[in-house]
Image (cartoon, rainbow, N blue to C red; front, side, top):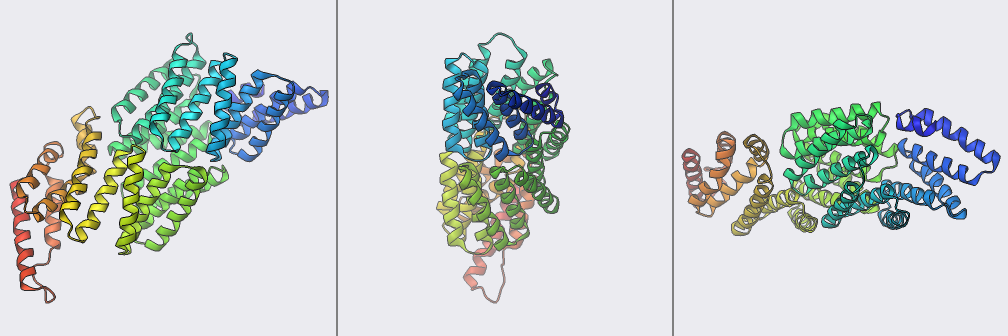
Length: 486
């Protein structure tokens, strides 16, 4: 009855039944029944977000299974313990536990537990930023599942695998692969409507893909749908992740008040669920809203808090994002030395973890520091590489509408690159940089940015020398010519 209630998303009813079963087995001194009930209670409390308590129950079940040499239960409890350790941010311990579960399940020919253990290993390597290893584990899990006879349970796990592959593809800039994986997952779910618990995760992955493509309206719809579904299904962790996605979408639209409120709400939920990574993501999001408001010291404080949490959980991708945000905050304080150091570190981390759009953003900001020091050639090198990374991801999109929406997010990058070429006396190259951008997005966004830049250049001032005034006037003239030639 408890297992059926849990599958039917009646979590409180499942809890009551499992507690009653545990008491009955304990009264009968039945170790196998006690272990089974403890493991099920561990799964229920995991679902409720009570991770420490769930961990104790799962360890108790595992000890009993080992004592009575019941290896089937041992494999399932080891898998459950690995999932708990992953959620609590103990990645190294979870890695060992999943490997143990995988080996034991393989010996027992339990393909379902083995595939889930492989997915857990993929999740760990994804958080560690070891993307090729994560992709290999996800691919291995999917291949093993595809080798099984048609079965709804295997099909549902296959859908979950595809969703994980899609999320990994999004962060590594393989947007065509992400789209393909999500399309396949949708097809599976259309055939197995009795598994609604997969739907919020699918909507979350779609929201992240749409956010990366720059389609903020559709992204918000996806995250809102994921939140509603997760609430109905009593999936508090997925609900918190959906709130985080909503906050990130609102931040991208520069709706700072709404973003801040959503980040705070998600952070409170993650804290209740003892989910260290999520708490770090929420703190980082709040730091980003503070950067948008120009509250530099508070932003640095929140970045440091997020960094502490990511260090605790071994989340190196989160650490890369935090390092980048710290660079923005220090630059806002005019501390260019610390800003440059953080941008340099962020570029290295993003490169190591195969995150092209993160690396592009970090290179763009590092170029800004170089331009402040009039290191035009070095800045241009970073700007060219940033554009190459953006276009690498652009080439994985399939339609002109998607190209335009995606590339519109990088208007400042292309405009700044063209302006820098003009400052390097490379006016022809400046027009060349903008030609492909304008062909896809139109010229209005670029023209507006260059015009605003022109207007910001001083051509007369008591504090300027005559040579400086002449140089600035010439720069304005050449930028105006560039703008009119587009």
